[in-house]
Length: 115
Length: 114
Image (cartoon, rainbow over all chains, first blue to last red):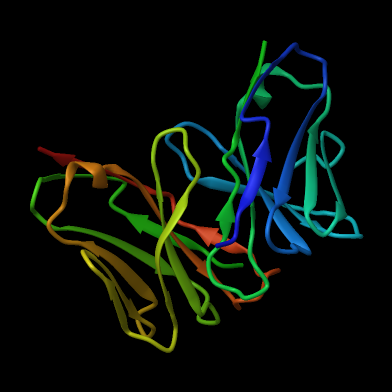
């Protein structure tokens, strides 16, 4: 089945630094990937849609200069949290849908803690 | 855009009983409805899905029903087991292409009491 790999699974960083999260589709090409943020005991909140070879589409209220998305290849999308602050601490998950359609496959998520 | 509502937010059942989670959606163009199970700290996993041309789908102890007229769909888990305890999310999608985004419900935390 379709596999999406996300790395790192956990990261602790100091306030003001930047963190890069990678999302890879391992056995299919993903022209589109989605980035979500999830707070404890809450639903998945779509942050942005990552499009290979073009600019990402951000949801309302998501700062594109803070959450930089790069989708440089058909199998890799990256999310960079720039100048991280404690309020950026959250669980970030990427997902992609195989060309054959059907349900999304999610990455394993990244627990970001900003201290 | 699409708005998906999910109820209840928490649900406790005795082991062996059934659990039902309900979702409604707003956009009649939505035609694909997956359900995800998320265990604590882990990724959501697709457990069952249904397309708009089908009214019901079953997979062992799990079933999903869809009422297109009323714009609601439900997840049914029979003979619940403790390992069914997790958060369940419904979702709706307009189109089934790789670029069609999902709209998620707010989640239901299911606890199965042994």
